[in-house]
Amino acid sequence: MKTFFEATIWPLRNQLYRMAYLWIKNRSEAEDAVQEALEKAWSSREMLQRMDNPTGWMIRVVKNQSLQKIREHKRWAVLGEGEDLPEVEELPAEESPPALQLVFRFLKELPEKQQEIFHLREVEGLTYEEISEYLEISMEQVKVNLFRARKSLQLFLTKHREK
Amino acid sequence: MKEKIEALLVKYYEGETSLAEERELRKFLLKVSGFQEEKQFFLGLEVLKTLEPTEKAVPQAKGEASLWLKIAAVITLFLGLSWLFVDHQSKKEEALAYAQVMEAFSLIQENLKKGTTSLEAIQDMRYLNKANEIFNINHKEEQ
Image: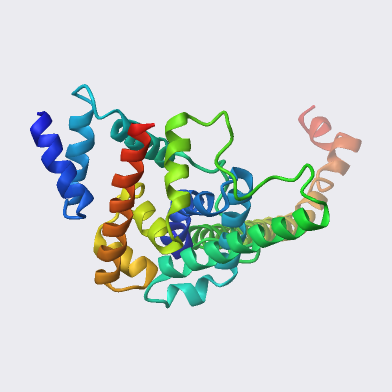
């Protein structure tokens, strides 16, 4: 018999990892952010079990961990003049498939909220209702942000075609 | 097919497609030539979808075993105690049986001793004929 943590929180790991990767753009840092978030969830599992939206809570924690990592890297980059430190605002490594690099180039142009909604819809395949619940925003906000993100995509691909 | 893809793309960029139509669009794109940018972009999304962190075990609390482990521990403890009780009982019964047998033996031995004590008088009776044997009285009388 699975515990609440095993059945509800642990299966989110892959999805949370991809979201963290989208924010941090560094795979090992993304993995650390998710691991730290899961450790927090583990120590607060009894409180999480009583929550209406544990997934939304997990997304927020991973986002905070990711932002903290970005801030740490920025601070180190200033202190050490950026030498030998991973550039967290960069695209995936050069060895990544060109198709993946194209996706990240596009996502970088989007505002944060649009990035998240676009990712949850296009990569995780969630419905408007699910996105609205996960991010704790209205359905209308989901639709408007997704519409704007797709319009930006249309423009981005047109520009790419013309190059 | 191309017209269908174009119609779906228009709907997609307007944010009006359902999840099923979006899946259909990606499937159709694989079957036709052209639409290179869209194909590459959707391929990138598929690559992103496959990214996973390295395998890790689900955390387990040190002092908090799972329910099944708890049940197994209780059953093992119960079986262990039952076995100890049964073993203790059977040893007790064996000891009791041994004591009863020994008591019975000791009674028999005591009664046998009584029997032999009462037979001691008979032992003396063998001397009754001794004088005749020594002095050969009967034999002489016959002669």
